[in-house]
Image (tube, rainbow, N blue to C red; front, side, top):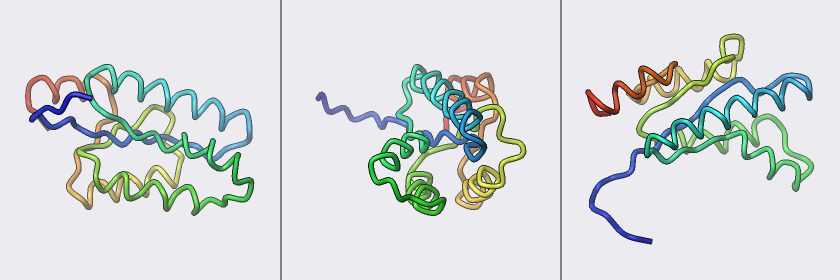
Length: 122
């Protein structure tokens, strides 16, 4: 691994997750797809739906095991990207409010994120 002086930006990718099983998988698909787009911009990403795999192994996680594990990652992220489909998610709304309370920029479109990265800096 090469060590550079330039800081790699960190993004917390959020989206709705809670739903029936089929919708949960579709929501994870959307979130991971969005994370890949953000990663392709040269940004490190945290995708909290990946905690799902740990939950499968544990077999006994509840909502707060997932939610509470994700929040410290939001705290250290430079910004949040919210992928489509979040509008009726109370958990995502809480994450957005938390990000805003921390002074983190929140992006709802890839175009706005790319513009900020290329023209304004984050």
